[in-house]
Image 1: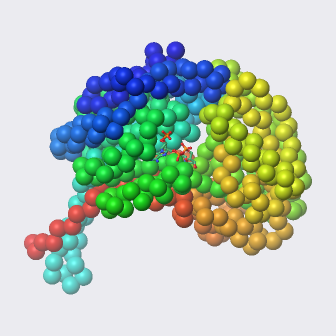
Image 2: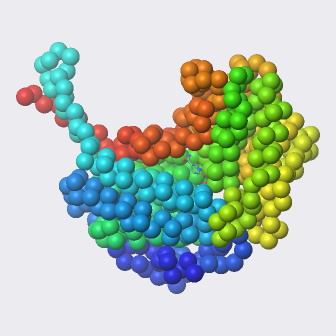
Image 3: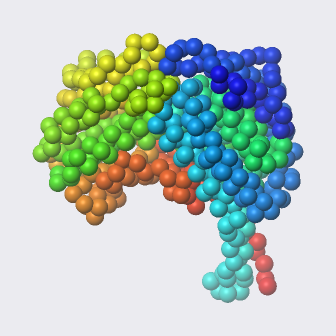
Length: 477
Ligand code: NAP
């Protein structure tokens, strides 16, 4: 069904190329194949680079206003076709329909935001302190950008890279995750319909990501890498980009702490937790991974969270009333079960308040009591609907535990008021802090992490600069 609404070829030089090598796309809710798509070789990857490199000369010189209008058109097409986008996302990723619609809307917004940013790329003029020289700064597009995206947000992670790159005047080679290529291919079709010239956006799908990416990163015509995925793969890629001193933007893993401080409104915290934990079934780099709850409200918070989990409807996205869909694959679901087994072995108390369908990659949500800071669930990115609860009595101790991780993407702080929350937020070692709310992602805000959660920022005013070089002209006027 999906192959009739999304292309199945590689997008190179404006053409959809079918390869003889194929790869299946699986619906994790049923385990069945929903499409048979092209499987790029190393040579196909290099062809995509050639195409992007050829197109760069004219795209980089295209007036920003024209680039902006094409991106705006892409926003309009995507906004009119959110249902199609959401259908594709749910089919290949498994996430609930409402999560898929939320993602489709969020993804389209990157086209709108960066259509607005395209014509606002600033230069600079100022005098040196002695006023004997002038300093002129200019920004220009880097060139060919290689983009690698993960499976958990197949649309938004693609548009969060493509939109700023195109706005900046760069051309792109995008490689989506093997599990979720159809949404990216559909976005390629949207961009073509919006008027993106041939070769400006190239999309390759492959079952040999390592070999294809290594060859692309070694190609001197590639000017920058923009990666979203695990810290493990990000580090491997950084080793490769170091060889060429290639600029690298990295949006990596997270291990977000969720703090409920003394005096916080518990119902507000539960509402925030349901978003921070359950959006995308917990498969988000921003997902609340560890809950540190003040002892005065631990029991109330935990029992209310169990109640909220029990009320969730679990099942395929085809039933729009379901709140929690399938995990992306049986393999990913089993990883979560393994973490839960290890936690139980450590003495944690697992309570699944509902039952998941037995067919397909479903998992019931779990609240886990009796968790110690430093145990398996607090150390690992769970990437599923599991909420480990740790009790604290001293706020300074809670901040210390929250920061006790190599990750630093986002933290959630629930406090008695925004002022108290910001005071604690300033102590958090994370690129983003959500205060008294369960969601921070916004195309107009700088998204990114500290520590091993990444390098650089996407979205906001910063996002376009990941694709721009700064050049300084020393000149006497
Ligand atoms: P992943 O295993 O790191 O894969 C991400 C991408 O890298 C996929 O396209 C994958 O392709 C590719 N890849 C894998 N091995 C590669 C290699 N040796 N060389 C080049 N590319 C390679 O991550 P994932 O499981 O898809 O996504 C989940 C992770 O992404 C989590 O850690 C999550 O926190 C993180 N994430 C971070 C953000 C953020 O903004 N910080 C946002 C979303 C997700 P294949 O599919 O073909 O293997």
